[in-house]
Each structure stands twice: as C-alpha cells, then as structure tokens.
Image (tube, rainbow, N blue to C red):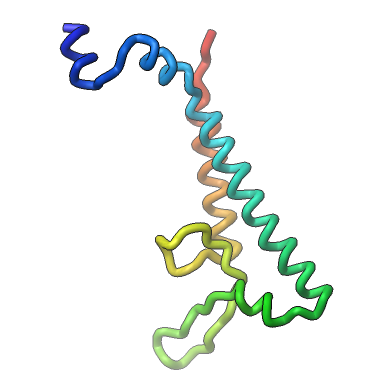
Length: 113
C-alpha cells in the first residue's frame, strides 16, 4: 500500500519528511513579513515623494474608487496592491490581509515535540 501511495504522490520518504518538516506557521510568518514590508515600502516612497514635492510620483501610486450611483464623489487612495488580481487595495485591505495571515500563523503552529 505504501508503494502505491508514493507512486500516486510521486514522493519518496526524504521528500515527504522534508514536506512534513515545514511548519505552516513559518510560511504564514514569511508572507506576513513580506506583505508588511511591501506596505512600508509604499508608505516610505510616498513620504519621500511628499518631502520632495514629487506629486506626480505620488499620483502614480493612487487608485480610484468611483461612486457607482453617480451621486457620490470619486475618491483616490494609495494602492497597496501587490498583484494584478484585484482592483486595488487600500490601507484597510492591507490591514485585513495582515491580520488574516497573522491569525493563520497562530492557528497553524505545529507542536514538533
């Protein structure tokens, strides 16, 4: 039976051990830290550009939220998006993702003892 499972999964014992040694909480921690760095870099750029009166550079980091009903105002926000999969992330989106990832890291901590 073991042989059939390994054939199906294409894993040998050392590969399985390597995978089992990965702590999911560490992966989530790395994701959290990378996303946090991404947000800090964007804010640092905006800060520096504001200091330099480089308004055009700041405008390039902005995204827009349109009033869908035609009665409200268009709002601009600093876009923290890191992929092409969404229409932009404002600071609340960034904070939500950071909180969710941190929560996953806490819940997936594996006791290796």
